[in-house]
Length: 614
Image (cartoon, rainbow, N blue to C red; front, side, top):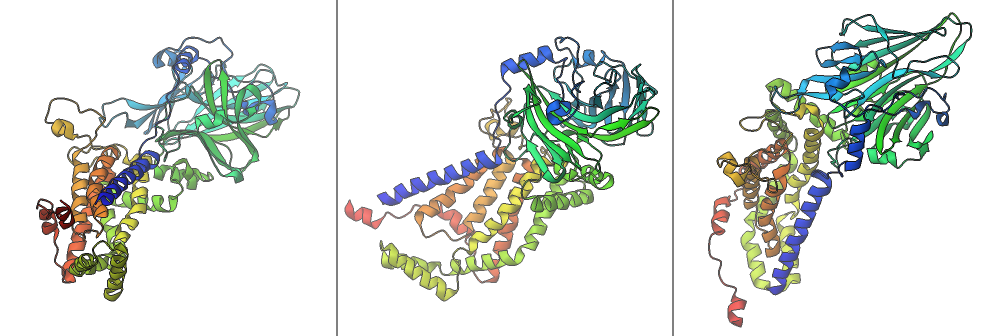
């Protein structure tokens, strides 16, 4: 008995370690370290002057000046976003999906809010702000233009452009004009669709007497390291598809570890002479990316530039040199994505605009062959029923039907094992403490009755990839964000907001976060417990104790998981119980659920060996 107790304690401890370790490293958040206080204060003081793009630096084979993305004026303390916007004359952006403005000083797209998305489930809460101007606390903007040498003045962050419109809409493009006074006239035509894509066509007309060579560039620049959610299953930071090199994902810390690029204050990674793709910066649900001409070679780069104690993260592209002869005009067309990572919208851009692998903007993960179909199925039934929660229930039911043959064989084997329980008990009593002979007799019994003792694992093994796929879809797709179910579940991508510590809201105080155990996790735990009690108890008492303890562990572990995932698991358990009940009855096996539940409260007979010793 002593050894059994020791083994039981060790087994439970190991089970807890595995479950909690899996939760910590795979599913639950692993929050990255927050921005250092020094960096945050410096960012607030120096936010008016975001630093520049190594994409135009000599180290990358391009011209040396001017450096795009910089402001030559002196640094000023950060101010409110409204005050920063007021520093420049602006052209309003007004589309069905976007609100904001374009700064005529610098010609930057630096003010973008998303009309269809709010900070909380309350539609009256503030809109999501994606891009912000220099001078504010967290500048984040896109810039396009030309760099070159011996060309006379080129447009910079301080250049004031002339606009032909006051509002940019999907039906009304904007044309900006700048004459450098040295023979070059620059025109920038900006168009926007009804979603999140800008098209920027830069033109240079040479009215001078000498030919010049100019290099088109585009960049997305973010001032200061943002606070990331820090989940293992989610990429946040620099992202791009750069020609044949394919998908590139660099966290903010990863970029900082790259070699010096261009000058001593800049580190990063560059890809030269590539064709097709995009580069940008992504958050969990939002992204900004510059997209070069898909048929023209370019140099792409991810960089971190140090300005004092402040970091500037930049994703940029630079095209090859264009010769502009006197009396001629050259054109460079690029695009800017600035918005929500909606699956259908992203896919349509990839298809309609021919952007190479633009669908990888969404982090489907290594198991994309499972996660993508899972989303498609959920999205299909969502459009059918209008509720993603109902869609989860329907998809789970369809998966049950799909795997019905495998599950039937598993439950049939379990039913047979249930039928031979008396013989198994007789074997254990006959051989007593001789574990070896017990196992041999058990195996002979299994062989005689054609029972597969591990068949009961198949329903669980089948559920694992489905679980991870659904978890990934719930976690990364914006379609699940703030998607309601029924009752108190207003966001399937967030944990159940109720908590047992305040009796699910009946007591007048907010429950602490150290134990998050809502109604749906408890329902899931109950269904898991019932499912296990329908199965024959493992012959090994240690295993039996672990199986009894497991629903409690999973109930607490899933308490902080997205509500949609917990609802899936509870519904899947319920369907499994019904399926198992029907199969057992068809095989003539008594369903002893109530007997097993009742047995938990019966006093167990004293161990004869222990009585004899006493």
